[in-house]
Length: 402
Ligand code: NIG
Ligand code: FE
Image 1 (cartoon, rainbow, N blue to C red):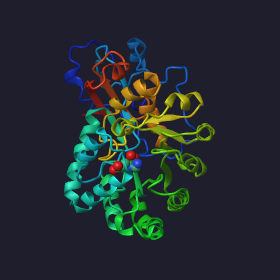
Image 2 (cartoon, rainbow, N blue to C red; image 1 turned 90 degrees about the horizontal axis):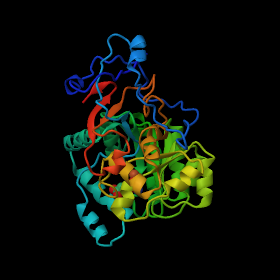
Image 3 (cartoon, protein in one colour; image 1 turned 180 degrees about the vertical axis):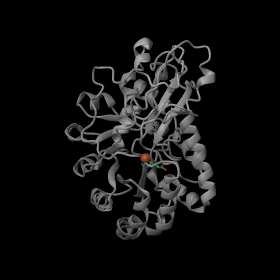
């Protein structure tokens, strides 16, 4: 019965009782790499476990010290799992956004501007900024988030970013292979050697994941495979940025190395879709990028119909998607990517958990962490139906409100 929360009664004093601090919790590992196979996909059935509604029956089995919260007829969903962010950085690139809206295409080279600003920032500046993003995430219902390095690109700076990220999440990803930094422009092989050697050695102890930006203008498939293989040899698990700016080998590489997830998936051919469908690699779609770069949205319907496990995430970063809002991702997924609201909410919760190989989060069920969101709305449909409206009424992480 551990971790179970009863939602009963009538609305009157719900606000006063939202503290939830005495909710019994079951000890769960911080992260769990043992996801043998992906959970069932929400093809037809309603994927979201529903909070029990039969108060009387539940009362018979309920632990006596459980906190009872009245949801007042509002919807309760699992906390969002944002499996892809880049939220340790300095500066911003609002000027690039303005230029894109006026027709300039997105270019990965802008990453180097954020690298310069990040290197120039002190630990405390970065920590303060990061704390702001963490608060933003939580206020919007995100209870688990991943963070990538990738704006340091020196041994010291990548290790620094990983350490700062590890202060706020167990899901830290080493992305030394984000772009080749300016000082290695003429010796990219040396940079890949550094990433796979000394940098990996310094950052892996603070990380769970290794990632690479496998894309024209970043790292080619051979370089990308080297980075992922080196990471796996250092005990990290793989994830990949692929097929964002054009078709390419990112998806095939991710599947070949057994990556947990390949993220973006904007430009896919039939072989990519088939490879994903026959794998345990999640396709993580990042519609904030298409919103902010004016590229075509990825076709989630095509992936779901082929049997691919789909997650959605914010990709919060100062270049391609400067939003931390999972409700916005859900609205975009429904409006622009052919997902039902049920599929989009699943992708933002259980899908993200699958992409992080976590089976302790992402659903409301016995044995899972009590990571819950109370919506200021009667159904989850309102997340897409009322875009841009702050509908997150309360958030619990591990049963603790706030
Ligand atoms: O996921 N694609 C590579 N990295 C980020 C963008 C980073 C940036 O532009 O600063 C992304 O979109
Ligand atoms: Fe990214």
